[in-house]
Length: 242
Length: 175
Image (cartoon, chains in turn orange, cyan):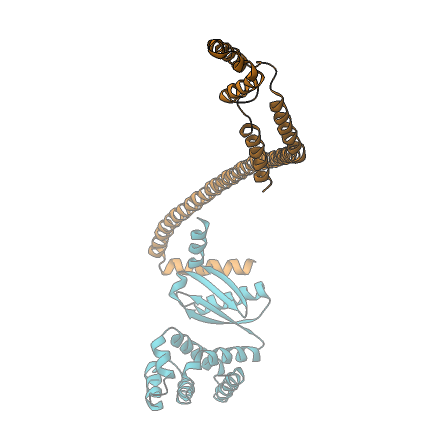
């Protein structure tokens, strides 16, 4: 609304300035008016002279008119000053300028100042907002970088922990495998010893069976009545001697 | 059968044998018959089988003994079989021998041998056992082929082993 009012005031001032201005001339009138005005003025001054001359006076009057026209023409067609304007133009122009200046001082400048202030405030606000946004972005960036650093640290920690766990697991597995191998070797040695003992036992039993079986057969073959009697006698003698 | 009843049967047999004046002979014959029953499962089962009539079992006993024992011994064994004590003859016989020996202040020496010992050998063996154990013993010979040779004497809980079987066993264990 204020902008419209301001534009209307400016437009009115311009129309008033340029619309009221007339054509520049020496007298401030038209050329025909100038001729007419000058002609009537000169004729008013020379009216009595024309009646006194008669026929003779007629030729003389014609000559005089021609001179008068030349003089009028000289007056009316005289060029205006290129520097000093006509007084009416100065008045109208000055008034318009004052009106325009007053309008500008009254409405224009405050409006422009207000717009400029608002614009400045908006720019300042935008700058503040930009600064705030920048600060926020920097904060977010810092937070992101901190989180990234934390993530890297956490990743490194996890990797290190996993490596340590893997190392521990590997050591445990190796230790267990070595223990298992040692147990297997011990068990194998025990099994071997047991198998050897069994084999030796079986072999010894086999040999014993063979030897004792042979001895039994020899003894049975030789245990006749005489041998039985001799064994009984030996028993009786041994028991009696104890 | 309870131990008390075994002892009562043994005492009754000893009383009959004493009445017949041949106690030692009855003891010996009863002991030998008991060892024969002990060595034959079929005979032991037959004499203890209640489904076989008592007369049949008595007849088997008489046929087995024949004239190899006194009539008193045969009658006592027949009485035990008829009374359904055929399965306890070994225990009763052992008790009879022990009670008889005890009545004579002697211990029973069960002698396992492949062959029968002569009376002289039994006398010398009893003397040797007395010097070894300090006990007067009565020799009861038990023929056992498994001893292979030599003698094994058991007096109560004491065992004196001099058999070839044990020597061979020791030889086997020595390997």
